[in-house]
Length: 190
Image 1: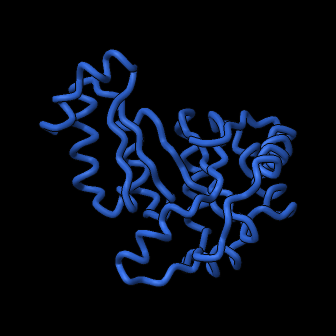
Image 2: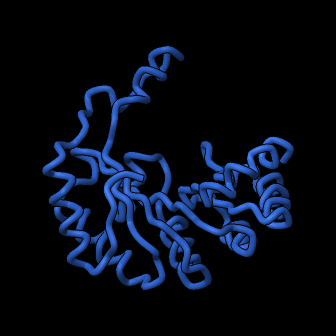
């Protein structure tokens, strides 16, 4: 909190604040909740980046102290989600529904990965679902980049994404247009 308070002048000048990210910040939910409350008391804007894979009660308990949720949504199909992430997306989708019911300041972030979630059916299911929530501020398309591959190599770990290439800009723009057709406010990048 001392570090966050040191930058108050910058938050005031930029209308910024503190963003909690990770990994998954809700993995340390008690610590996160404590810092969120202290930021609220200090009138510091807060944002939390989450994949939503957390107990619903923990997520909803944080709502009063979070000004902006940045919510990653990778795949709508549970089978594909398990294949690419190792976990089911059922909790993730349910949590986003619940969050949209109680918080209108959520941005859905869609990490676009060629060959994983750039197919027409993935885009249409995403567009249908997010537009059905009615209380999501916008959707950000985050085109895949290979920055993490080098980190894996330095840690002597194998990366499943080693052979993936970033999507061409024209493909990203086309997908943005398709999502806009669902009435969504879409931004490329985050």
